[in-house]
Structure formats: C-alpha cells, structure tokens
Length: 468
Image (cartoon, rainbow, N blue to C red):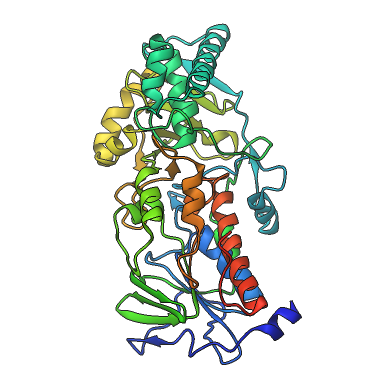
C-alpha cells in the first residue's frame, strides 16, 4: 500500500468543483478534495457498487467524491421505517451467505443481526382456499423441474433463442395452465430472475452463479451494509448527474447545476437508467455497449408491506403461497413474525404484475389484497392497517428492480458492460457482473473490481485501466 502511494502520479487540479460556492458535502465524515499529491475519482451513485468502489479507493489514498441524485444513500438497498417497522423496500436477503459472500462478511463487520430463513417452512393454498398437500406440492415441483429440464435440452439444439414462455409451451403446454406449476414458475423463477416468462431467455435465463448456504435476512434492516460502506466517504446527496464527458486526460461530470473535474470516474447507473438515456455521455458509449444495454432486461418486481394490529396467521411459518389465478400477483407472502414482533406480511408483484401494483394507491391495494388474505388465511383475516408498496419502475434513479437475461442476451452482455470506456470512464453495478447479476454481492464485487482497475493503472504508471 505504501509503495502504491509513492507511485501515485500528480493529479491535475483534480476534484475541482465549479458552481454554487455554498455547496457542501451532505454525508461526509471527512470531506475530501483532491490535492497535488493525489489522484481524484468521481463515483456516480451511492448504492452498494459505488460505495464499495469509494471505500476501497479512499483507503488507498485516492481523493474520492460520490455524487448521488437521491436524498439518501443505498440505491436499491433501502430500509424504510414506518410505524417502527424496518421495511427493506429493495434488497431483502443475503443470497448464499457462505463460500465467501462479501455481503455476509460486511454484515458481520457491521455487527448486524441476521436470521436464516427456512425456505422449507411454507404452506401453499389453492386458488379457492384449500391447502395444498405436501405430496401434491411435491408433484407440482417435479413437473416444474421436468419442464425446465426439457427446455434446457431443447435449447442445446442449434435454434434461435426464444422466450421461456414459448419454449415451455412447446415442451409441455400444460405447465402454463396447471395452477401449481404456474405458482412455481412465478415464485421460484420469475422472482429469482427478475423477469417474466414472456421475456426471459429460454437459453440463458439461469446462466448465472450462486454462493452456497441458506439465505439470511437482516431483521433490523439491510441499511446496515451501505451505512457501513459510507463511513468516512465524501458523499454529495441531492446531486443528480446529467452529463459525463471523458477523455484521456480526465473526466468532467455535470451534476446538480455544478461541474466536477476528476482524473477518473466510475459510474454505477442502473441498467434502467442507461436504457432510458437519462445521462448524456460524451464520447457516447460504444455500439457494442448500447446493444447490450438494449438486449438485457430490467425487472419490474415490487413489494407490498402490510401492517396489522394483530397476527391472524401462523406466526411460526416463514412463507405462505397462494395459487393466484393471476400469475405473479399476491402469490407469495413473507412472515415478519418469525424474526420480529412486528405484525407484518410482505407480498409481491412479480413479472408484469410488478408494474400493475405500481399503478395502485394504498386504498386500492388494500381493496384488492383483503379478499386474497381471507382466501389464504380464512375468515379471521383482516384488512391491513397500512399497505405500503415499493415503486422501483417509476423511480427515476433506478427505472426497474434488477437486470435479467432477456431473449437473445447472454452473460457476455454483462462482460461487455463491464469494460471501461476509453482510459478514464469505468462502469460498475449489478448489471455488469456476468456471474452475480441482480444481487447485492454482485454490485459490491463490481465496485471493488473497478477500484482495483484504477489502483492498478496508477500503480503501473500507465493511467489506462485494463480492459479485463
């Protein structure tokens, strides 16, 4: 580390800011500016990817400024607290906490309380309210797994990619009408992937990787992770980036009516924001990158947190399923009472239903969901006192939930999006990881990856980050 610092080349008047003189950092324990002995980096986005990059670079002696358009840190990791209930409106699980998952390590560092969720603790109710027996549930799962295996066999042939819905309809049309099979396709597959059957790539929908271990949640909120990463970092909140100009000599970022100059820039704009061309980049992204942005999918998943005065459901069961007649709507419920005293159930809008839920206000949500609660839990079920839904598709700083493999996309598209643009503009975010897309640990690893790229460039004196 000391050798690296000695090799740091003199930065230009890096990190200089022009604009309102009263502008001050909004979330900084130690406000930093570039000096003649350091190298400056602007990180766009205070989500996990951006914070991971900023923390690594700050610890290596770089002068780092994080620009965040929202009035908070965390990006799609956000714990809202209503009526005292910590609600993870974005990421909710540490998926696969074993095998070196960095988020599990950070949770331990943050001394965050964790709870292992039991995926086998689930009861499933039929569309009319009858409980599905264990044998019937198992048979439905076998049919679901057999249909996916048949799709995999079909896609090994030299045929063009097609949607998973199309492929399933060919290998076993009944799987798309059988209520229990549809339940598995939705809560197992659409939830995990982020996409919906009509848009998922039949060839590559599951070409990512997972860490081992049972998923865990953070009962006091996932916010512990970004809060840990943000310590000591100069973060400018309410500073929306509108333009990035980069060359071999540096980067100029326009944000919040001001201009920021730096030696390097790491942008962590979500895939949805790139799809909408919300930030002007000059020179433009390569045609190869634009093609990958266009072909990859951005999920529409949303959650609904329901708060009740008292529990009317079995408080020791982790999950409740319902064979909803509308695929992806209210078919899965998570029980807060297994890990807290809060009388809260969480349900979901998966696939296209995520966008539909976002069109409803709280009163409409309660009106639609109360009959479902009575079908699943019986006549003792009451309407929720509050029904708080997320709105990731209309959030201008995300424009969707997380990336997925859409028809004609592949893991190579994530590799393409991870490549630097020129010598000074780098890219991070969950959509830039070919193995761990759509995860918090994937986002974290990409931030670390781009930080190491800059560290290596300065260390070897080339100023040019490696392409891989």
